[in-house]
Image 1: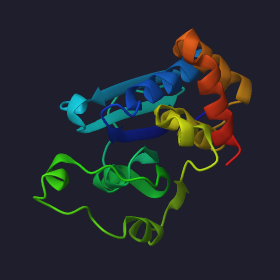
Image 2: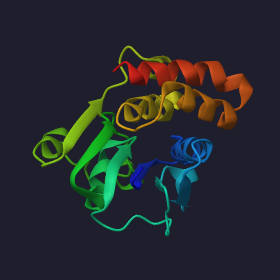
Image 3: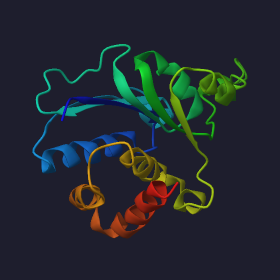
Length: 189
């Protein structure tokens, strides 16, 4: 397997780091090299959270260079736009269509950018919007990260059993059934 670079973006509390850990566990279980880096400065206050995940036969650096990510997995629209420069030409964006207003928007210092889905659709990349409707995300937004991993799984060379094993190795047992349900729902989208 060649190297695969996945940039995961969201805001604090959306499970960006957990999604990265699951991908890391998936790679380790498949005997692949994996490097990860995460940034979560003001995450507890709804700030931006970014996780770089690089996996393959041999990976030398944990940070994905600008314009090199194969996948941009984003849990919020504005974060998708903010980290778009990391996506390579011909890459894939998988993003949740819900918007979460950052602090400057909540304080009415700025307005939330309009027409983000249309801007993404105009790019020369594959764009996969996910609404979360008719999935476990509707009842429990905390499984958005796992649902989007289910969507991502359709684009990576791992079997469903490998993904479920990575979930079992990473997610606390009391949340495992809900997370498996969310993952499988994402795979079916």
